[in-house]
Amino acid sequence: MLISRLLAGGYRIPKDISIASLCSSPNLEYLFPAVTAVNIFPRKLGNEVGRQLISYLQGKEFCLKTMLDYEILFRKSAERPYQA
Image 1 (cartoon, helix red, strand yellow):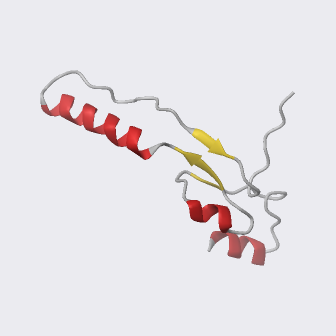
Image 2 (cartoon, helix red, strand yellow; image 1 turned 90 degrees about the horizontal axis):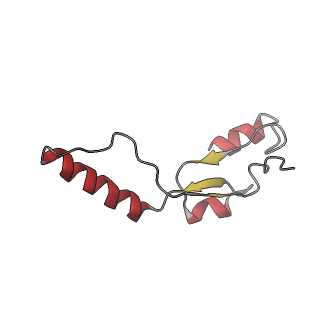
């Protein structure tokens, strides 16, 4: 719906505005233009959340912030940043 409204408003994606999703889905590839997404590997995320929750419930030390692997799936809705 967002893409439709932007296009109807005269915006050119990605020339005027880039679109990206923080959730990856196969459906995003089939939109026009295809939507760039961050792939967070849900199984790894769930395992880490489970470990941290168990530690918290057991009164053990746990992390408030954890860095997990991710990848950016560049598609047509966002231009790649310039790299020298």
